[in-house]
Length: 381
Image 1 (cartoon, helix red, strand yellow):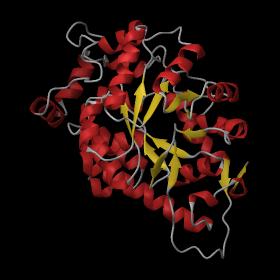
Image 2 (cartoon, one colour):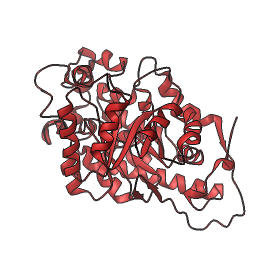
Image 3 (cartoon, helix red, strand yellow):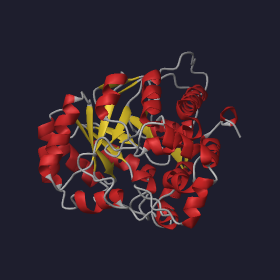
């Protein structure tokens, strides 16, 4: 299978599985516990049907949106994801370059493998910094100051990850950073030699946002230890309110899953929220993000920008979320599979196909702009 044979999410996933050693593929592919919530995220879209309008005279399609003060050419953005240079040696460079090319936001992860400063200097696209809250309050402030100095436009605090999810696929393969692989996991690396060659012949793997704070040489579970020991499970609304005031700009909470928490986000001065269950990678048994979207938009949609992610695989998924009131939709696994499959060329193809789907489906819906989508265009079964 080659890149030109990839036409949708599942095609990119299949090609990624052929290119990546099993432990790394399963890190992208897996969710928490029994992966019920991960599967539900995509299945939930099937319970909502689109209602097209005809004879509306659709000619040109306007996909532009304004999200948290950022003018975007697309209603989709690249959600922040970790460890991208494990999946392909181009890593965040490939994804940020595509975000710039297509005119949308790029999320820089705290567990990213290219520094926020480097991304900011090289790519002219709105950037989000995805932030974890640490026990060390001085560290929190220092990292926010670093983001300000890097001209990050939007601070995005992840609130659903005060501890790591139980990702049993990783336990079975021994995946960790640094690697601690079992025999089966090691064999997967032996059978995918090109991944190893690229890993060893390109820039040394690192986590530049956290290098000063995590000893990558110290233990075999540095990432696990980071979630267990460095993040603060006592984080509360007062802590976040102080961060919002200190940042004094566009501030978004990622991981909101109830209208009550959405209301609290408005009350403390946030300018955006992301309805997200972390792609089903944290609390298994939670509802899908899509299940929560309408009620949260009804609660705060007139007061704050409501973004949405988790489970998005198709242009129709994007349109359904937008029709329910989301301002923009984040993609994660979709571009990660494409990145693993073929680097920047893969991400460009995935984005091109998704944009073409959205434009075609907008025409079939009889809508010429994103702003024309509303709940008259959908029905739940």
